[in-house]
Length: 105
Picture 1 (tube, rainbow, N blue to C red):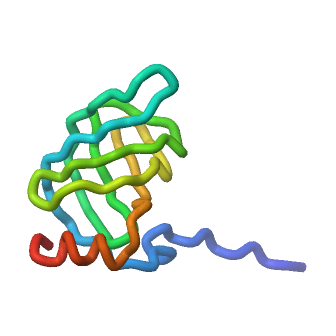
Picture 2 (cartoon, rainbow, N blue to C red):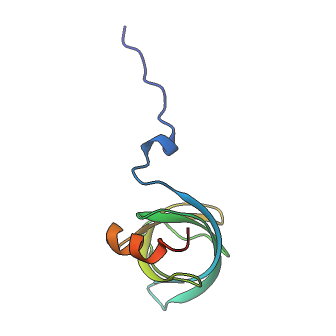
Picture 3 (cartoon, one colour):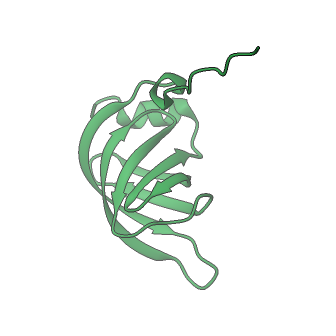
């Protein structure tokens, strides 16, 4: 009889350390009709992505540009969404992200 493995905790799958933050940002989402801008709050960040609370949900795979008030601009895509909470995966290299956030986390 084979045993079912325990579900993997998502936090244990993370490759890069997450830093809790509370930063204001604007996010421009690309759409077929026209880009639109959302105000949002960054809840945590790593060199590979971030967790954001946004004014509305976006579908996984949506291309976004973020401007974080304290740090600067990033490009990425929605990795997951749950209501107003979104996970954004950066298109930027981890080295560039590390350089931009180093003095702010």
